[in-house]
Each structure stands twice: as C-alpha cells, then as structure tokens.
Length: 190
Image 1 (cartoon, rainbow, N blue to C red):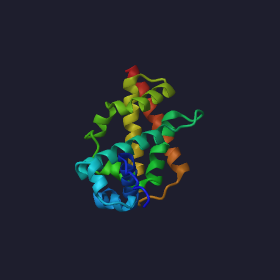
Image 2 (image 1 turned 90 degrees about the vertical axis):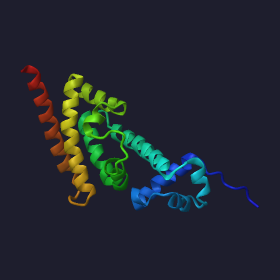
Image 3 (image 1 turned 180 degrees about the vertical axis):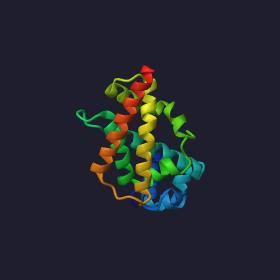
Image 4 (image 1 turned 90 degrees about the horizontal axis):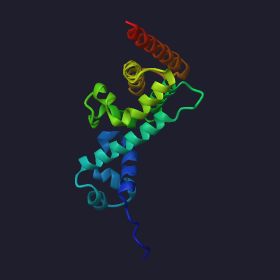
C-alpha cells in the first residue's frame, strides 16, 4: 500500500485559489477544495477551523499574488502607468480572483481611502513617488485618482461590459496619470 499524501495548509490554499478561478469565491467550501485535492474534507478542516478561516487565508494569498503582479513593471516604463495597466491586466487574466479581492467583502480595508493608509500599499506609493518626483501627500492624491480610474476600467471589463483593448486602456491611463500629476503640482503652487 503506498503512503498517504500529506495535505499541507499551503496545498489547501492553492487548491482554494483554483476553486475560485473555476467557480468564483461563492463556490469555495471545504468540499470543493477537498474534491480539487482528491481527498476528504478532514485535512481541510484540520488546517482551518472554519470555512471563513479558509476564505481569509485564500484572500490573503490572492492579495499577495495581486501585489506581486502589480509591481512587475519594466524599468523603462513609467511606474504608475505600469502598475495601472497591471491592475487592469489582472482583472482580464484573473477575473474570478479580481472579484474575490474587490467584490467579495473580504478586504480588511472598508474603502479605497482606508487602503491608501495601509502598509501593503507603501511599495506602490513609493514607486509612484519616485517616478513622478512628488511628495507623499501628492502621490496619495494622484494614486487615488488613477486607482479609481483603473478600478473602474477593470470592473467594467471583468463584468463583461467592455472588451479589453490594451492600447486604448494605456492611452486613457496615461491621460489620467498626467492630469492627476499636473493637478497635484498646481495645487501645491496655490
């Protein structure tokens, strides 16, 4: 008889992401994860006291993947433009994970304004600040403008109301970025 495969916490979380990709976050439960792993629900419930704990762990992992995806910007590209395009691309390439992150209610921050002050956003804001030569406060203002714009685009695309056209999105994001930076600099002069 072959030895039993040990199901780790990490394996369960990765299986949960696959379930979300296939069925949406609404389809995530101990049974669907166990089916994905080819095991009973016992290992899932051994590592997670409740399905809500599993969902929070899957959300955290999705957030990590999303953050790494956002920051994968080529050095010759404007950092904010690259981050903005990556945000929309994430929605195009991972629509169910996008919905899980931004439309499921599992985010710790209750709003975009709360997210701006989170530790997780520091690397994004710092890359933007350096790229634009702005103060941190100006960068937050620019980020908010561009984030709202990019999120709107991504949400419309992920909900099948717009076909993704990278050139079009890039042009609009660039205009949004340039306008927001210009406005931040003008506000400083007042």
